[in-house]
Image 1 (cartoon, rainbow, N blue to C red):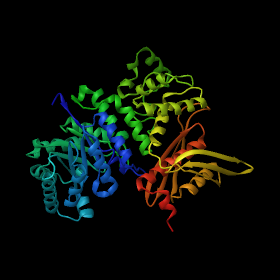
Image 2 (tube, rainbow, N blue to C red; image 1 turned 45 degrees about the horizontal axis):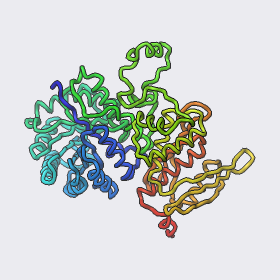
Image 3 (cartoon, rainbow, N blue to C red; image 1 turned 60 degrees about the horizontal axis):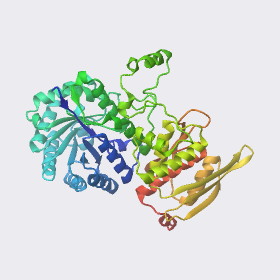
Image 4 (cartoon, rainbow, N blue to C red; image 1 turned 90 degrees about the vertical axis):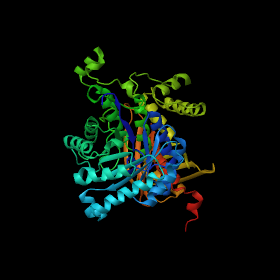
Length: 515
């Protein structure tokens, strides 16, 4: 199979969004979907339409706007879910319905309470129903790696005969190890008579840290679709990471002899966008996209890199869109230099957005002596976070000290451009700021997580605050960055509240009219 191509199926917007603490609104999902399209993803699993109106709307919006990638909707194995999935994707240029049904003994016995015969009949009937609506049908026997092998062969043969064009071998609970997962793929290719009529896909979770390894072994054995997520986010320990998979295939072409459609120079930007919008920080030591992935501290390593990069770097950081240069911008830098740096970092802005971003850059440059790439990336993340605000943070001021009561004053610009202001006391300056904001926005919520990180080094470093709030059982993340950590905390809180408001479409007037 030398020279084959493997399809990249990205499920960041579906499985990735199932990660605890993640909540994306339709606009944010569309923004990520468009970036995945720019990245060259073959299939984008945009959501699970039957689960909520919000998910349905997001999938339908993405189906209309994204034209170069196949748009996939997940579905239960029942007619209502299948028809709902079809309604969401029917405007897509290329659409797919993805049906899943548990097949393992554990799931059949304790969850579905169905026999093998009942599950087989349901699987076949569901695919037949979906095929009447859509030509591209994927079927997943959920918890494949713990499914009785002979029963699995029957299910796969049945759904392919019914019209499935892709069969997805799912290590749903991250139980498999590479050798046995590879043998599973071999067995399917040898024992399912009509397997040549369908693409073999794999979906590996990372509970044992083997998601990427299992997926790559499956590719070696003939799988030709990989299901993955940006930064490896997802249920529990997450999914196989797209960036690791793609760069392993590219870097070790001598072993895999396959290619992908991925434009690798878009990887870093995609990673940063997903991190910004989901609120999940990329660990510094994360492979490919982590802050330390191309940093060298050891003297021996530094000496080698200076003499020849490949002594300690197996990849050129530019191939993933991470700038290798260390150009430093400051307050005397012009708009042209700023625009060029943005392009190098993967940001292409229209004139209006550039003017707005440059103004924010100048304001930051007045506070810091030098502006690094990390500062610019954080600045662009801030631009993304404030692009769909319901309430805008216009002013925040605090008074505190060991002999005084922490007091905060806050001024917001409301939905109708009205100016809103209030003050509050708190146990500390951040608590006072949050109480003042709550007096203005008046949306019940509970702060469940608060963390502070320094984006760059030095006394004038940008501080980044990540928070999570809960409201009516749903979780919303928020991020904010500023040289003043109190301001960064206020920005993060406003970001989370705005996401809550946009998601629930709650207006201030509605809140005030509540008894």
